[in-house]
Amino acid sequence: MSEQLEVIRRLWTEPYLTYKGEFHDFNDLGFGRLPNKPIPLWVGTSTSEKALQRAANFADGWMCTSDIAEQLPQFRDYLIAAGRDPASINIMFRIVPKQTDGPDEWVAEARRLQKLGVSHINIWPNAEIEAPEGESVQHVLNILSVLKREVG
Image 1: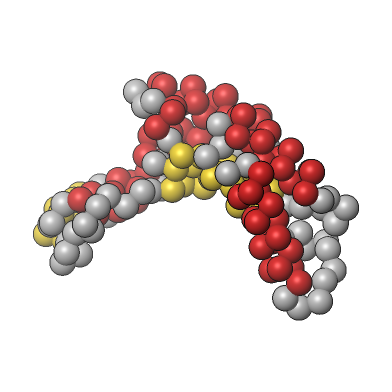
Image 2: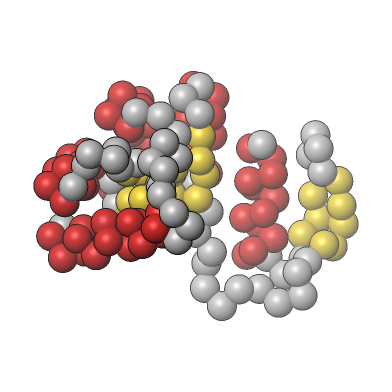
């Protein structure tokens, strides 16, 4: 995976790339036109040490797939070990609202995540909540509206 992250980043920033690695071997490969501005590379990881280190070495943004409060200190240590400023990396986590949750719970969770250093929040519809078609999307939109107004 590390090799793929290096290759894609270089393809986005170099007109033509010649590369020989363990998994990729090509000469003068390019996309034709480079992006007008850098494309941020987001990496979602499991909790494994190797995955966290890979994200710390390559990612502009990290999407944590488990309890962020447990993983964040280790991830920040890996960033520092890689010579990167932890404040320069965007961090995303999710809110999965329970059926009994309301605006107070949504705002409290978003503020907890902000205090941890989360810069982006995803709202995941809870699969356990049974709702007629379309209501799950409306529920997510309602949550977003409340969070935008109360948290920013």
